[in-house]
Image 1 (cartoon, rainbow, N blue to C red):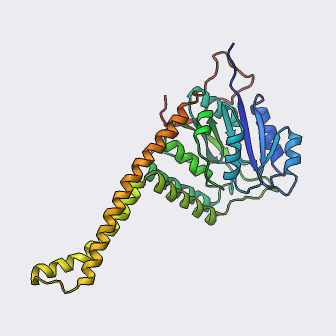
Image 2: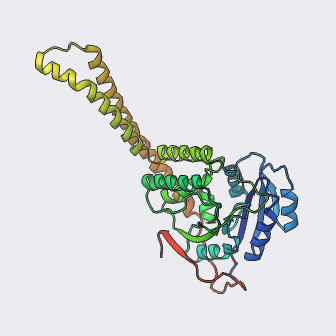
Image 3: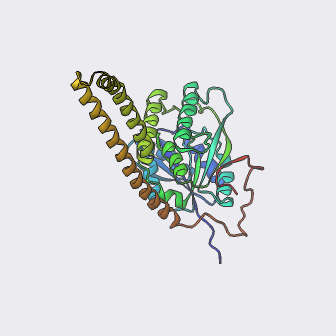
Length: 332
């Protein structure tokens, strides 16, 4: 007899008493067979109490930051499909069934709820511009076409969850998820979902400039770790250019006069060029190590089966009609 797949929902929360009850109830209505976990992240209000009353299993992560919650949840929760959504009731949780169904139908390792703003003020101008700039940076460094890199509404396969290192501490965790999928070329899809303004009583935890700078630093750090040959080639190229600017006049004087009157400049130019060569060499060595790490992550990913359902699986009332979907990798 076929065993039906397990589904879990994870809702990270920090002081979301105004909205967490609605999110949990909507998740239970959309996915009645799923287990809903609310991960309380050092809340000081009634988030825990309201989440329990709504029917969620509450767990606590005392280290503040969404990345810490994701790291803990991915380690603790074991399911064939794991949905994660913010507890601020800005995402259309009624579409959860569509995201989960698409994950199994693909099968995909990640389905992202790409945000479509439906309310004025739901998405601040600074956040919209920052999202486009950061998404463009990821496209340039890691390739592929990503439309909403910072969406907090996603469904993952078990093999994605168990191969994902989850090193981020705060809101940069979505960036890490996106780059993990792109770098391993994991099959991914996007479903357009509504994104609305926070209900009264909710307060955004995002800070446009602080969190934007933090995410940019994560992208640069991941580029250094995941694309070392590119980063080191750029650095070596800059150093070599400086060396040539300093050294060409010295060489020209030597050709013309047969002497080297500016010995310190000649030594400095030679030293900088030597450093550039060493930086380039280190980049290629690190690229080989990165390739080995990528192979290891890929093997961990392949140790788990693809998300599938038995042919007779059905849920009454499942789905909300046609699913607008955009394949971003390895589509059927």
